[in-house]
Image (tube, rainbow, N blue to C red; front, side, top):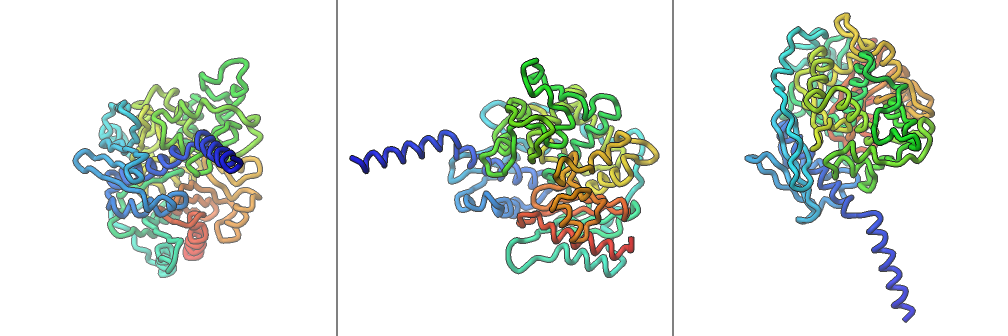
Length: 460
C-alpha cells in the first residue's frame, strides 16, 4: 500500500508539473522555430531548405529533439510544416513581399494590402551615397583578405562558425566583403534580434516627429486604469527592457517571450496582458516581448499594418538606399519586431551608417537629435542600451569585448546565431557579420578578431 501511495504521489506530481509547465508548448516552440526559419530562409533568402533545416535543428534547446523533428515543404503552396514525429505541428506560409508567418488554427492571417514595389520606388534618390558597385568588393589589402579568411574559416570541431556574409565599410565605402557559396550581395538574411534595433530606430524617427518619446507613458489601453501599476511604464522602459513586466526571456521554450513569438497569432496582445513583477525602471532582463509591444505602439501611432510598412520604407529604408529588405508581420498584422526582418549585409551596413553619422544622412536628420547617444548609453548596470548592445559600460561583457579588440565607443545590433552590425565612430567603421554560429556567444571571439584585424588593416 505504501508503494502504491508513493507511486500515486509521484504520478500526481508529474501530471501537475505537466499542467503547469506545458512541455507540449515548449515542443511547439521548437517546431514553430523550425517551420518559420525554413520558410523564411527558403522562400525569401533562396537557400536550400534541407541545409537550412539541418542548421536550424543544430542549436541549443532544439538538439535534444532533432532526432524526432521533421519538416515538409510545399513549393507550390509555399508553405512549411514542422513536427516531432507528426505531433505538435507548426505551419508557416510565405506571402510574396512580406515573408513568412506562422498560422495557428483555421483563422487566416491578416492580409496586408500594400503595393510594395510602389513603396520601394522612392520619388527622390537616397540621401545616403552609394557604398559600393554591383559586384562584390574584393579587399585590396592582404591583411583585410586575411581578416575575411579568418571570419569564414571553420573549426575542426563544434561549435561551427557558419559565416554567410561579411561587409566592412570604412569612411562610407565598402572596402571588403565576402559571401558564402550560393549567397550574393543582394541576398537577404534573417537578422533575428537585430530587428529590435530597427524598431528602436522607428521609435527614434517617431520621437523626432513628436509622435512619441521615451519619457512618455506607453500608450497601451489595457494599462490605463488608475489602479493598474503598469500605467507607470514608459516607452523608454520598453526600449531598455526595464518595464518590470513578467516577460523574461530564457529561450527555453517555456518562457513567455518564446511562446509569444511561436505560439501566438497576435503577439502584442499576448504581451500586454503580462502582470508587473518589479517597478518600471528598476530591473533589467532581456525580453523580446517588450519590443513587440513597441511594434504595437508603432502600428497604432501610424494607423495600421499598411501604414507601418509605408512608414518604414519612406522614413528609413528609402533614405538609406536599403533595397533588399523584407519585413515580416504576425497573423494579426503587427510587425514582428522581435526577430524577423531580413536584409542583405549591405543593407544592414547602410543601417549601421545611419548611426555612425549620428542619425543624419545627406545633410538631413532622420533620428531624433540625441537618439544615437541615447541608444548607445548603458541601461542600469548592464551592457544593453536602447535596442542596441554597447561597449560604453563597465559590465563584464563590455569589458571583455574591449579587451578582445572591439573599441570602447562601439555599440552594435545583435541577433541570434551571431548576427551583428557593429558601429565604431572612432574608427569610422561599420562591420557586418551574418551567419549561423552554434557557439553560445554567437562566436563573439571570432567577431572580435574580425573587428580587431580590420582596424589594424585600415590603420584607423
